[in-house]
Image: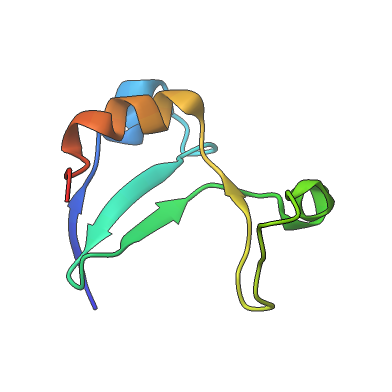
Amino acid sequence: MKIVRRLGVPPRERGSGTGQSCPDIFELSDGDFAVIGREATAELDPELPPDAARADYERIVIVTRETLVRAKRDIPDA
């Protein structure tokens, strides 16, 4: 599995000049997506709706609204 491309713009274009906050979204060679974000599993796990589940190996990650909005144009429809 490899990173094929970034979705959206680089973190620097979203104001991360220091590298301290660099949420990012990448498309992978198998068609899945990888996300860099702030880990928030402990905080949000109790807030999941009853019809949502998280496996022990999965984590809840937060990306900024700006990151996702600016990636929208690069997300395929299918």
